[in-house]
Length: 383
Image (spheres, rainbow, N blue to C red):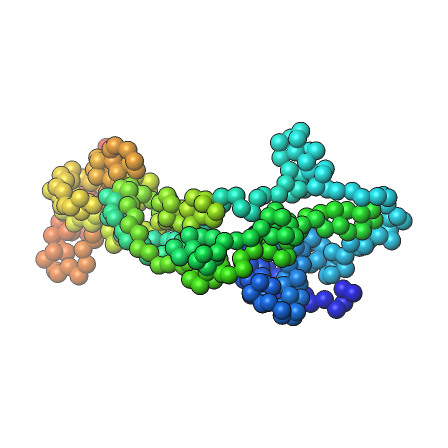
């Protein structure tokens, strides 16, 4: 009767490009909405709860999801492809048992057969955020405040999801395992697989009287301001991990972390390459020829530098130890300054005449104002 079934993506309210995490979140939301314990006596809600569980069973399994995307409901039908095999194995075959056998040899599950205990401690998910800081803050470090929203253990019920004076009950269908065995007829015979228990939504426990604060989830969403220490020397794209400041864990599990990805805003004067700081400095023609004492900007402030005579445009000099501190270590990189000559514009007549005389003195032009000699015809460079 596959033709009468609703599209599984429609059932969970997600698109076909939904991620595994999106599908899981949608399932939890829909399962909570139609849970029989929250809708006592509502047959329609009970049917929708089963429909949600069936959709999740397929879309959460990579192989089943691929077959469903290609063939629709027929692709996940237990008898799919049976006509091409002409029978199959007789008797029951439990992949869960096979997983236990392989696990005893190789120390792991087979085909996802090993089942996790839904009541075992589970570590909370981490929270990922981005933080933009200035060039100087990245160089010297700083402290920042970040406001995040995270799930915390409900204080009213201490995380068990039950109203005061009550406690969760072990699910009678799965006996607390959160999984039930489903037997299907296939071309290879009857295959037993595991699926999330629809009665307890895979939790292994049933809450008869949900906590009013968290509505049975055991978690509350809270906004928190967290102090984050940015180390000196951090670079763009690097992350900082603040332990235990993520979402709370379940069943007594540890909280996740707060992962802060760093972005650095551009600076008006400086660029960065690793621990090196790069900048440019313009000088006059006279300063380049005669030398001069310059004031060079650095991330520490201005410093004096003696520009040597005859400096060429494009020359680069180093200021040792004026770069970025080594992250979590001692010492600093260097600053590299590239010099460019500022060519004068809009000279008056006297200034131009002075330059002509300078050019003549340098042998750049003929005394009568002719064109400059090629360098190979100058004195001492051939005939």
